[in-house]
Image (cartoon, rainbow, N blue to C red; front, side):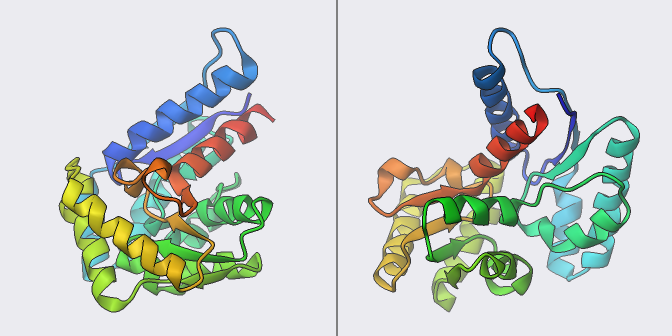
Length: 229
């Protein structure tokens, strides 16, 4: 079994689900008392979020690169960055490593291809929805990407940082998300990516008839299977 190097804490609420899901899949696949061999470095998210809001991606990349190097030195065979947004600096982190990063957008795109999804809506932080670092990965796999209208992006981003990252789960916010998901579906999206690892804490597949793709679950499953293979 390969050792997984997890960079978590962005936020810690969703990192909990990574650890749980990885171990559940390892137990299911390997059986008996098997669990994942993993190393977890959980960051202080307040520092990372400050760099994000300042547009100081170079500094946030340096912080995560230092952590990834430590995980490699500690024996990790590959790296899993437990957040969508910080994959913006994944190329810089990868350049400092001799082990691979399991990229969340690539794993999600492969999953969508298996489901024959050609056009998808994307929810996430404003950085993830607006910038190209994430969308281009999906486009490279032949997937068209729809993002919400401007005012809806504001709502999505606000709920992520002011509620979900603080562990606040609100029925009012769930309703807002479901309305936005319905809009994307009406605009032609065959499904919607929950492109922030906290969104799956708020919205579940059973809440809507629109297919939802929880990136935290997809990423965690990919990590577990990669470790076993």
